[in-house]
Length: 217
Image 1 (cartoon, rainbow, N blue to C red):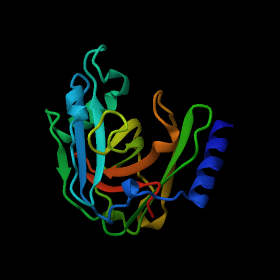
Image 2: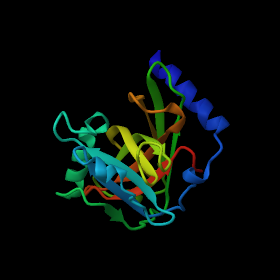
Image 3: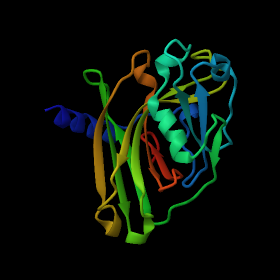
């Protein structure tokens, strides 16, 4: 019942679409990805401007620390796991250069909030088996697009709020395609009008090969 309602709301959102604002402008296909990792015990790190290269995708993660850390309410264990997949011991920014993935189509859509959840759906199609490397996985994330000054942040942030993955990609090759539908909780304190969906494909070493947003074609 829940899955059916989420699927319907996701399909409706994909059909109607939403107008984009300058802060939601779409990067080009194969654009670079920059990830910022902020420690939960460093509110000054959050407040400081951390610009991304022009035209790049960005993801901002808050890494858990002590339970009483100032940013602990927005921290995600997934942020620590993401650092581990990257083999990155520190919370310094991680820039991944553009790596176009020929022959692969990745799309993501998101439904409106429903009983505290958002329905997110990723669709992936590859024209040939070799288009996706062995060990590649899919990921879905609910992010909150924060304009400068909205949450004591000097610059724009795209805060990762909830994550689903790894998602298997068997069946995406040879044109068959696949889709994954997940329900992610609308986090306390987030504003639903600022929430967006992201989907990406990682290789076995944590490198992002393709990334899509629900407000981008």
